[in-house]
Image (cartoon, rainbow, N blue to C red; front, side, top):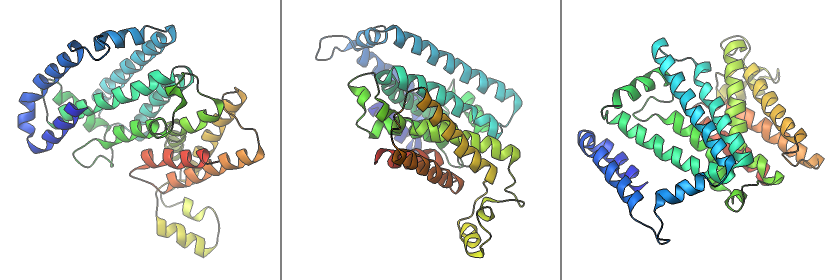
Length: 313
């Protein structure tokens, strides 16, 4: 991570210099990390190999992740021939994120915890290559970014994919995660850990797809005049301002609630009181309203809002 941070800083200061030193530094760092033994006198690559092959479930999950990576590359390649991606097309990455986090959380929490850090480092390296236009992959990454970027990526960095990964990973990173001790996540802890998946992977995806296809936010029926005819409440929503539809917000609430119900009936989450039901319902409702009035950082904010509410009670 030190190398990644150094190269990221150098990318903005001396982008041309990075083109010449990035790959040599990366190769030297990889050789050092692989060859030099640590305190256990074992080679790091050997430790990693033994960890990945110690359990058939890890191998199976690794194959699933490899298949998802291939699927991601196929989507990017296909869209490169089609031109600019639509909002619904971009949400495919949210679905892929769900397919990464759900099986990992349920069956191999430790492995998923490790994979999130590796994915963040890999994305940072790819972003350095794209921003500095380092051959031979810089042009391909720039083209892919052009096809999939949205209004949030108006700066130098492609923040949307980082927000998506960080948003889904934050519940693992900020909680005293039980999977650090065991791969088995308790029913009580599962719902907070899935905050990112539920809000960003499920809720935001359904809200965007349903809202863009069936929503009438632009000039017809807007969320700001849906709740009440009172001019004061209308003026309040008008003051906040948004371009989200009522249909999208309802889709968020219904989809997240349905997935939580499925987890409950599958005996994966613990909902043992009416008070708990009220808290979860309140979390879903508040998060849906935050999604309706948040444009730039919703992938970061939504998991934190949901996680805070369901974890504190």
